[in-house]
Amino acid sequence: LVSGDLTLGPDASIADMSQLTIAEVGGDLTFQSMGKIETLAGFEGLTELQGDLLITVDSADDTLKNVNGLDNLMTIAGSLRIEYSAALQHLDGLGSLQAIGQNLTINMNDALHSIAGLSQLGSMQPGASIVVSGNPDLCESEVDSLIVTVCDDCFQTINMANLTCADDEVCALGICTCAPSCEDTVCGDDGCGGSCGTCDAGSSCNAGACVL
Image (cartoon, rainbow, N blue to C red):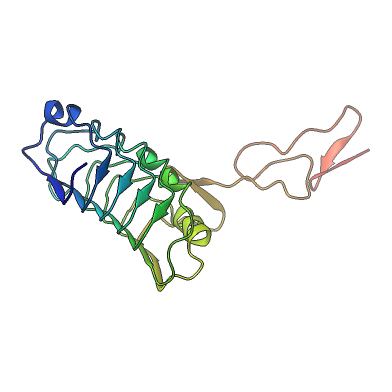
């Protein structure tokens, strides 16, 4: 148990973090400019955080690619803030997180392409804010889905300057791709160079329907 705040900065090493056996932090937990550390391994025992979780990687030299190591964290009493990372790609390491007591901010992370790791998160507290902005590889539609799931009575929700695809495209893992369209059709082109199906011998495809 750490009774107060815990901050790990550029002087932290992989060897130092691997020796940690922390099950609870009584204040804020801050990872700031983590240097050459690519994961947060060493925090596997952490299940509860009494303050904020702050991941603020504000250097282009940082290589933090994921938050693996926080896999067993279930509760954050304060806020979750993830900002300014050039290398962070996903939040799968937060797959056990069920509750955030205050606000959620995911801001200006250049390589972040998925927040599916927050899929277990329950409803935010009334009056909480969700701000997700400036993540150029993060699908706006994925942010919308998160907001719908966890925001029953939020004070504000902002989904801005994230990746937006055209109406005829789908977004996945930071890429907009053609959305196949086979509604009310059983054959013919799906609009993306694929097929909606083929007709049996003796019939042909006409306007998406098999005719004799």
